[in-house]
Length: 315
Image (cartoon, rainbow, N blue to C red; front, side):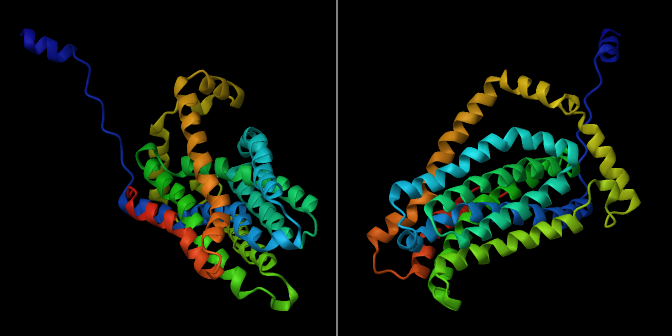
């Protein structure tokens, strides 16, 4: 009897979290991840292609190493300054509009870099580039949270984040090839072609996001009615209390948690190492391998990122 009473008084076991059906997950992956991942890949390429362009533009613009370092770093001043305001913008306008607007804006900024004639113009465009790029990542993360429940979001976020490494590898190899193959075409230097060519996919993906990405699962024509109900139930079961907090209150709550500062410090150190390699690696390679063709130099510069993709964890 005592055992029966104890059993009756004990709390019921927690229900296992619902998982996303395989067919529904495949549809979300095929419709969402190519657009979001492609945009993130291009954001990495468009912010870091300056490192390879500098190998040629240093003579055209009389660019010293200190001027190049300033051009590389001024991007992050506007990028950091615009992070929190763009999060508020995402909440008001919706992720789809912000994603498309930011991609079109930074694509135009990147393409306009091909037209610079002075160091001052270069610094101005690099500074302006940081503002739209700052809005892409929070809008993309919000999009993932609107479509993927907790049980599947980490996998989708990992696949999305891997594009930072993939973008570094593709950007390095393609930049070297563009510098060498297009130098002098139509009377333009290779570094000018580099910015024009690599901005084109960004503009295209921005237009595709605007036309193909629904604002919410309820508006997705490629989901059946039953799939919409299933996805809505899964997202409702997440029960995130933080989602109902105003932006300022959520920010204050996050800043009071030690884990926020710990993760921030870890990301700061990792970003320093990453961008030192991205921005100054090509210059160091050129000094060590002065006779190596630019196309091969880009392939050598892509090796660290390619190796990290091969040996890194698979989601």
